[in-house]
Length: 423
Image (spheres, rainbow, N blue to C red):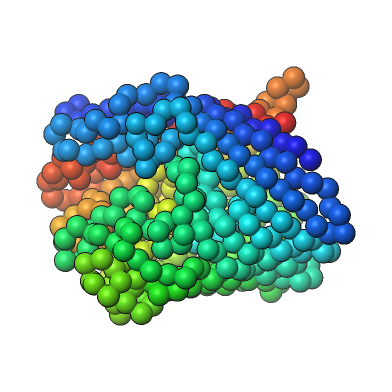
């Protein structure tokens, strides 16, 4: 089985008039080959190439803040801003054994869990090198898990051992306000992942997810999701509750506190709630997240996006503690037009930008609005889909902000246009 994928991505960020604006055009393509099953065994290989077909010089810093571009560079290779042509990556190379509705995969592959996930809001997703097993234990229970020994983060082209993958993205500051310096200074034998999903009742699903990063930190997620069955075309009620607990392991990656990732003895606690209605063509939900003041919620941005109900594309609450986040979402489908619309608005009350112990990246409180429009082509263009995402983030802080806490963070808007063609 051979699959081809072509992708075009236009992104443009508009900051306030005294700060630099950015844009980028990216285009690329890839191929995946997967053999038929032979006594349950399969081989798979895939690769992707990207070209920068139009953008400014990403090595040039904003003159007022001395900051580099945050978003558009992520369409290419963040480790080499000057690279405009040779952007390619071997993405998948695996051996898989299938039995019944289960499988085990060894090698470079894609996985999607609460803590390590595709986070594919750029040109290419995050990939992992792992031994990973997925077991369907009856109609109600699914178990996944394995050992991850290497990662190729989104917006990069190289493969890194687990510890070396942490710190490729900006590192922020330590709890004392000094610049973080854990990149290249962490030690770990890898990641153990476990994920269990069980339908306790037809309408109630329980989820337990565990991420143990040897010598650095441990994350545990507990979640319950309720989805009422629709009757006579009436809207169905849905609800969810979530708890995330994190703890440092050993010294958090390094004996030197200035070079560690997770402060020795540190922890974080997060709670989430959601409630809504779902109909055939529309859905509504209210979502809330509370990250307590016990410590920062930390998950390497190289590995995946936040698992919170209040996550919205183009911003995260990773690196923060003492957070109150509220998000309202509304979706509408027009089947005859092959169109899907979603509007989301959120308010995120964060610690002050100078409260470094609970604000790793000096992110001010903000409100955000996203409009997401998706269209699937039919007929001669079947296999092509389009997405337009508009994002606005506004300043909700009570105190004046320095320009470095504004650029690419608040008082900004962003346009995203994507085209995908698969065959």
